[in-house]
Picture 1 (cartoon, rainbow, N blue to C red):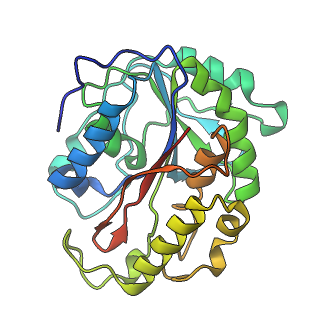
Picture 2: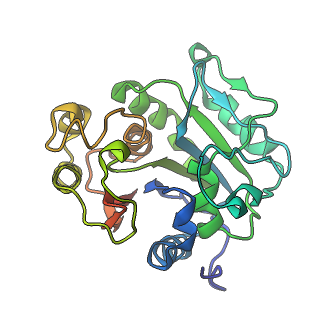
Length: 268
């Protein structure tokens, strides 16, 4: 993993918003992918704070993880090597960020500050690669719904945080039909449904077609690409946080991992 470059400075300008494929813990052993993620973070200004919405925490009312220093991690995965269950990511106190988020969320969301919830692997696995020093305050926000329109509105509500140096991350996976994979190898050939959905997603994003993206359940490769939609849903938070959700995003990472599309992008 690459270190932060000397030219990186803490952002005094607007941060981008991003959608990334977070991968399972073995992502940390994939040299290509870790280099891609580390290079991506190094290309951006250094965030003051990070707010991440992960596919692995669905909770309504809307909830935030504990802002306490060295928030514990959630090891929400099974069957991997023991070393993954001993990893830590001791981030600084995030109380200031919690106050910022609370101040911009309308009362009808009934935002709940969870006293003990930590970061799940949809957050800490990619962040260990992108910001390995764990020196940036991080909070995770729950997915209060899987409805695209509601998540677009949530992203729009969060958008002003970008002007305060907050990196907003939607963490999911562009395809996630794990039960339909025949083998789990980093070099496994991508099944047709994964390729088809990835092509459709890229074309839809490039054309700024929000209506088409919101109707993803009729896309090529479905329902295999997303038997359930929680890994696609964070994409709408990211697009909602964009200055113009219909503007073509910058596709930063593409390709496949275990045959699943790891397409990740950045919006202005």
